[in-house]
Amino acid sequence: MPGDFHVHTQYCQHGADDKMEAYVLQAIEKGLTHLSFTEHAPLPENFTDPAPKRDSTMDRDKVETYLSEGKALQKQYKEDLQINIGFEVDYIKGFERETQTFLDTYGPEMDDGILSVHMLQAPDKTFFCIDYSEEEFGRAAAAFGGLEPLYTAYYDSLQASVAAELGRFKPKRIGHITLIQKFQLAYPQPVDFSKEQTKLLELIKKQGYGLDINTAGLFKPLCKETYPPVKLIDYAKQLGIPLVPGSDSHTATGIGKGFDELSAYPSQLPQPLNI
Image (cartoon, rainbow, N blue to C red; front, top):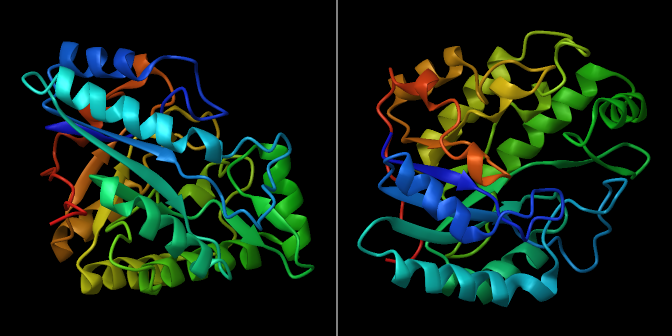
C-alpha cells in the first residue's frame, strides 16, 4: 500500500490523544510513503450533533490549529513522507448550503478529503448517528420503523451525497459506503441491497470519484469485514473506480491496520483537491 488515506487525530473528540506527529512517525516506521489526515469536519453550526456525547467531530474553534499543525508537519517531514491535510466531511441532507460554505472557506487549504454519511433523519425528524453504538443503532432502527427503511435511507443519502453540488472543493472520495453494516452481526441486513449498492458504485464511477477502501470494519466485533466488503470492492475494481486505502485510524498505532487484507487490489492515490 502506498499510504493510509483515512486518518484521524487528537482533534477528534471521540479518538485518542495521540499527537499528529505520532501518526507521522508510525507511517514512516511502517514504510508508507503517503499519509492523509482527514479529521472529522465540524458539523454545520445550525445542526445539533445527534451523538449522545455530542462528540462526532472536531470543535470548530480547533480547525485553524489543526491545519497549522498539519502544514508544519508537512514541512518537517517532507523528505520522509507525503503528508496531506484535509477533512472527512459529513453529508447531511438539507444542510448542503452550510457544508459548501465550510468547503468554500477551508477548501483552498485542503490537500485531500472524504465525503461520508454518518447522520440520518428519521420520519419524526430526529437525527441519529448510525455508527455510534449498537444501542443507538437499535434506537435508529425503531425510529425508522425497522431495519429495511433505515438501510434504504442510508443508501438514498449516499446517492444524494455523490450527486450533491457542494462547490469546487467537494471531496472526490466517498467514505465507508457500507458503514450501515457496522453492527450487522447484531442487526443482520434485512433484505438484499445489492441493487442499491451497485447503483451507488455506478454513480461514483459516473462522477469520476474514488472509493474509500476502509479496513476499520475488520476490527469491529459486530462487523468483521471491510467497508465495503470484498464483493463490492471487486465490482468497483471492475468499473475502474480508484480504490484508495484507509484505516480510519483514531490512534497512531492503527496506521495501516488491516492493509494486508487489501494486497490483492491495486490501490491508488487520492485525487488532489487543489489543481
